[in-house]
Image (cartoon, rainbow, N blue to C red; front, side, top):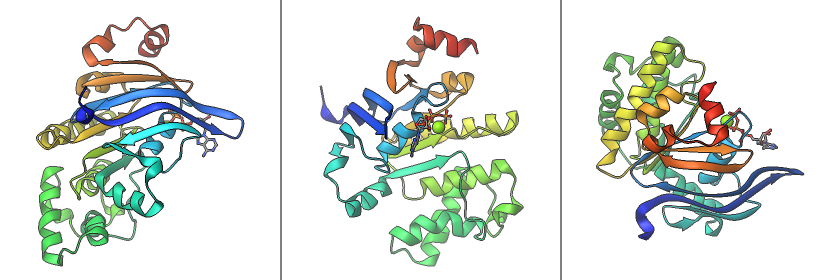
Length: 249
Ligand SMILES: Nc1ncnc2c1ncn2[C@@H]1O[C@H](COP(=O)(O)OP(=O)(O)OP(=O)(O)O)[C@@H](O)[C@H]1O
Ligand SMILES: [Mg+2]
């Protein structure tokens, strides 16, 4: 099997918080250039798993390989550098409240590149276009944007450095149905656009309909174990009792 077929590989990952085993021997490989969604009941360990991809949490035992690198071999400094390869969009797309749309989106460019202001402005305008925001939002503060627009700004910021991997932790939780559909469409569009450069998308979701609509692969985490991982069409037919129960909710 080619080593570069997978963007992320977990080998027997165990994570304990004190006495509490939250990840219980996860063996799981995420395909490069595809959209993989991780489903599971609340408390299953999904967010904990995602934090291991970023090296924000360290395994109690087991190995996490990302883009071919064993994260435990990277120093804190190298990890910081390495994280430039990721985009993240979390539930509360933490924008800087006192920064404008331009400043929010340009933030990683200012932090990690030597771009001039004009180069940043050009890139930010490209990104606005990619996420469907009008240029007139450039100088507005987050408080002057709708929830859906703030998500778009968060996504534009996540895409600023052309990440190889983009991670979404419940990107639509708490949004109304129309904004939810818009955000899901945007995730799909972003993935399709990123496909030519083999961008990998990993989504944590509770939304079955959206998951089936946008994913290539679906995995199901239960009590810290990956109990199912299949191409979406096969996942729909899964006979795993927990998966069935989840789908019937
Ligand atoms: N830093 C931490 N310290 C101690 N316990 C933690 C920590 N982070 C997570 N946990 C525990 O690990 C378990 C899994 O949490 P996690 O956030 O990964 O679940 P989840 O599947 O993302 O749930 P949800 O769908 O509700 O977001 C929970 O019992 C949680 O309390
Ligand atoms: Mg979570």
